[in-house]
Length: 231
Image (cartoon, rainbow, N blue to C red; front, side):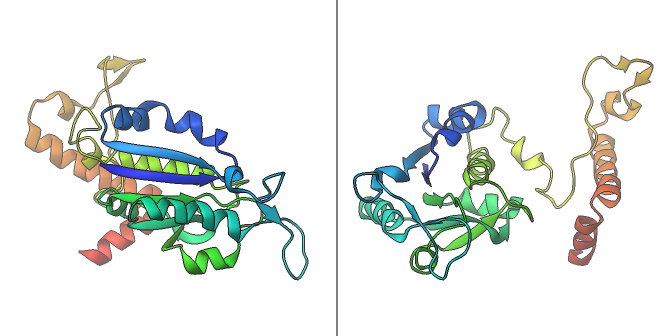
């Protein structure tokens, strides 16, 4: 079973996306555990302080080392963790390959960035990898943590109704998915491609591969170029 522990300054942001749909199915089937930890419970003093001004001045606040260290070390005292991830704009862009790798782990901690970030000493002492959703800034890392968790748990065997579903997703083979159609066969004078109703599965798979390659070349030439270089 995969266990994911998420450390957040705003845990309420994670409750809805991780208690619905596929993540809920994964936990209901006891194929994954998702635990959300409120950093304020480890805060300092009467007001449970978790942030402070940065040394050297400048705008914004920084998540303090002590509360983060306290929750991380409490979790580490209970089990061994394969990865401690920090959600950061300077992290490695999250891709399907990372999700695939994380789905094979047993225990993962995700630290949600907040404010201007976290004390560098936490990154140096505990964090094993940093992950970003892209070249933009969010108010906090909760959205990133939810995206990572959703992408990972759906890969666990038994979570999806069809075991082949996750394997045929976009990016699993380096290509975008082909066009998809469902009933009715004719919609506003637009007909489903005849090959898809032919019953010839070999020709259908060949058509889908061709469509995937064309779509990737058109919409994501960067992916197509990488695929071309790998061949």
